[in-house]
Each structure stands twice: as structure tokens, then as C-alpha cells.
Length: 105
Image (tube, rainbow, N blue to C red):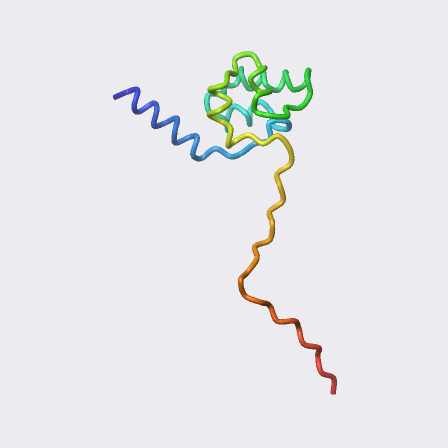
């Protein structure tokens, strides 16, 4: 029963986690937002980034001591590697009428 409760607690944190840019976030943010990453692993991520440059892909994160494929996969949806893509404008099915010129008196 305790294991089930612990599992459900971990799942609930993953649902509310905010995506972070792994190349810009500080250790505190990384440990707070990523599942299975505590303060020590978060510091290791920041240190690795300082020594080796930005992470390009999820696989690069596995080069950090203490981070394996399982942890990387668990956080895949919450890790950004660059700037967030701009949101495309929503297109409407309705045709817009061109604005009519104003009449002068």
C-alpha cells in the first residue's frame, strides 16, 4: 500500500511539472520541475552543461553522472533544449470580410 501511495505521489508531480529549458535553468528549478532529479543531480546537470556546453538532445542528458535513460525518458516531455517554438496563430473557418473604406461627407 505504501508503494502504491508513493507511486501516485510521484505521478501527480509529473502532471503539474512545468517544461524547462535544460540549457538555461538553474539547479533549483531543475530539481523542482523534473521527476527523479534531486538537488545533487540538478547540480551535476548544471556543472556538466558548464563544462561541455548546451545539451542538444535527450540522449546528451544521459552523459551526466547519475542520470540514466529511464530518468531522461521520464522527463522527456518537460525538457526543452532551446527557445520555445512560437505559437502559430489559430486560423478560423470563417472568411473575414475586408474592411470597407470609410465614407467622407
